[in-house]
Image (cartoon, rainbow, N blue to C red; front, top):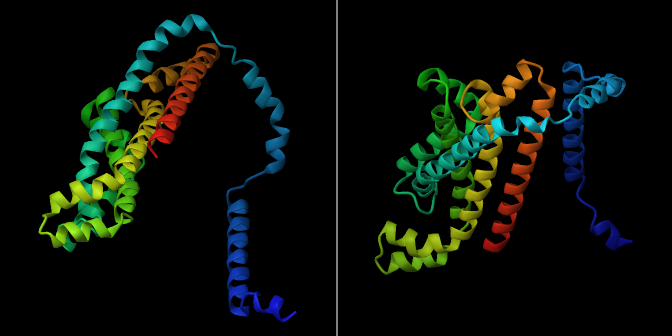
Length: 261
């Protein structure tokens, strides 16, 4: 009996746990009520749901007009991933505590990355379309900035978690910052960073479909056209193609990441 009592958490810890759970539950109830979420309407509307999806019979004759926008979507995602990676890598090392030049530059780099990360890709696209004109260019710029924010966040945490032993050894031997990064940090994080880059490409392929809704190029513009003209059969064919392509990219990316890490 004493042993059982010894492993029980202190009363203060139990109270904190109960208080946290109570706050989470209270916030859920408030959000549930204020958003007018109606679970009953969700179930009673299932007939309309199935009736709508009954119209989505793919029209495979639409495939010839799908391939070109699909290729453009892939190209937007690919170019944005490469450009975003090229910009993010220097910022990662500038914004990491163990590889920064000084506290001021580290703060500036982290502030820039926070701003980039706080704006969604769709909003970036909506901002650049009026400036750069509708088409792939604003989509590439939007996804490039989005990629920088995502990679820098993940990469900075990885760099700061690197084993400090090799860094200290090279610094003690008189190596400069660039050599320390090249020979002590990069070998430790290169595989993980490559995995993050592949993951960013996955995200960009999916995001490049959505940003087309605001005129940023790619297959999203074709999808919006089908929606506007109530062409459910063409939209169904397009959805199937997008699903297959994204599924294939996800599978290849997961396989590649499993080989790297």
